[in-house]
Image (cartoon, rainbow, N blue to C red):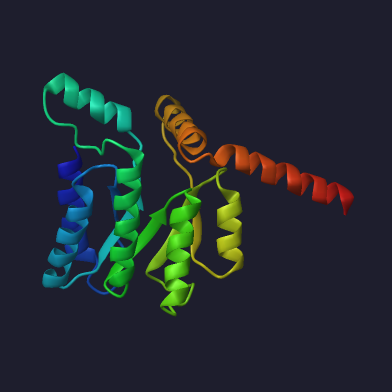
Length: 204
């Protein structure tokens, strides 16, 4: 289904992203082909005279992708390690930043290191925090420590809210919570920050 989504998003960008970025495609960087797909998409957009819009995420269906590949007898399309995924994700961030006047992108991540990388690079290059082509995004209810600090310092940041039938939404949220705790270790840190804030409010 991803190929069809990519084609549809590209056609919509060609039509609606002529003057400014309106249509965005989500790229899951745990897939081994997505970094090159990003670069190819940029060349197509540049040659076609439209803005490329992308939301960069690590990915939500790692086990399903591997199981499907195994069941159907083809090579797994996803990276074998988290380190490889992280490397491609950060490379995608920097690629977009290198072309931020022609690519509008959303860094959809709860990862502090990737967030810090993008912020530090923007500062080093004197790119203003509220540049209209650069946004950060976290899931509503997660990584508020990142969202609030980014917003307080003038960066474009949003909280995204998944919606849909309960049978689809709840498993998605469970995967995000598991990813946030098992993969990035963020959940325990968030609980510590929440407790610290509660104590601060009680004292004051």
